[in-house]
Image 1 (tube, rainbow, N blue to C red):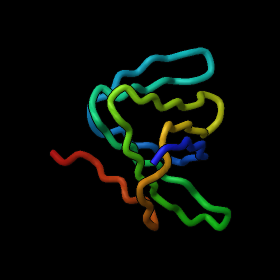
Image 2: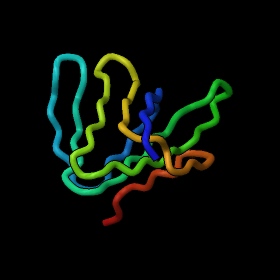
Image 3: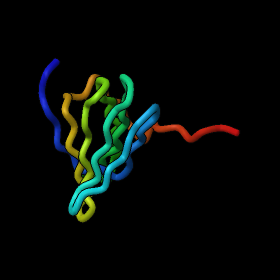
Image 4: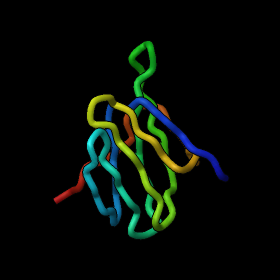
Length: 90
């Protein structure tokens, strides 16, 4: 599925292998392998939703320094209620 997404977030999780390059107003994350990104957004009523994105090798995700905005080169593949991110165990 082709497309792009811009999303206001409260939390972003970048599991997998990524390169990070800071720019003036954005941070660029480049996928070093086929990866996924989990983005948690908060609705007007305070309810959280987690969105899953599959980012192919070489795909770039841009995150704003001054705003909680993320720009993704794909459309989400699924979403779920609440913050469904998980921390590393151990």
